[in-house]
Image 1: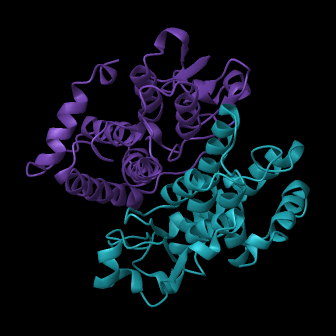
Image 2 (image 1 turned 90 degrees about the horizontal axis):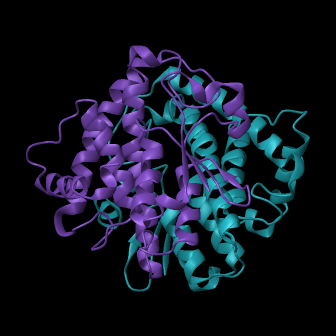
Length: 211
Length: 211
């Protein structure tokens, strides 16, 4: 199995953490793709992934999936333990629900804030094969949405150890990658968001977050 | 089980079609939420869903999920036949992958185009509890992305009956809801997108699309 990764980007990081939590690093060949130099837009990478993004997972039979959703679903089904997407129907539904929220309200919002303002990403306001101009108002909206996401997550964590309940899950991985990326971009977690701080520090301590 | 729906909106439509395909309409109580009149922002609806959106699914034990992802995951696990999210690990991964793409590149793009331009949605450029101003450049970007989505889907359907392979799946449901909504907003499917036309007409014929 092959995993196309980029060590500095938040989307493939979700899959990297997922793999580490499953304890299957040894059976997966990781290929680093240099997004900074635009390797994802080269002809040779387009043959691997016409969408010009990472993560990509190539299974042993040659099947390729091009999204975190596809990669993590494959890994969960092929390596069910430790379980990261829930055991009961209700757990599975809540994890899918919270993972979706973390992706749409968290990860996409941070991406909007960054990609619509960073000088190095001019005309690259979206990932993928097409160029899109930056929209400054969208960067500003992204910043507001990140703040709202922080407060939403803090509320969710008020009576819970993890985002979707008492067990660490895929929803935590997505939320953590979004929030960790936001802090790298100098968003500060609000001082009074005590639940969020507690949770964030506990995920920071996991071995899977350090690779 | 209760399903909070809105008959004119594309996101809950995914769940409505999912329920119809499963043949479980009779055991689910559907509650129509009047988005046009802003019912989703009332105090009484906020008690049901603080995110002020539909779909919402409330299971018999009172668990609530607030996204299409959460609703469909619950329904697939609780009512596995007919299968809409794949049987083998590879099928499950490809369906998750394509469903994600249809949501991000299709449904969100149509939403961007509409919500950032429609006079009736001033200050409602995003769903949810917060008001966000419309960004005209984002409406324009959304329109470009919808065109790209049409051509991507046409290519994907070149050698396939359905979006994720030979069986109808959740990925078709999401792509269909996005594209059907786009056509209602006067986006025309390109004349030369023969695969897309063939697929779209076949989904239009399904009983689940008519309710």
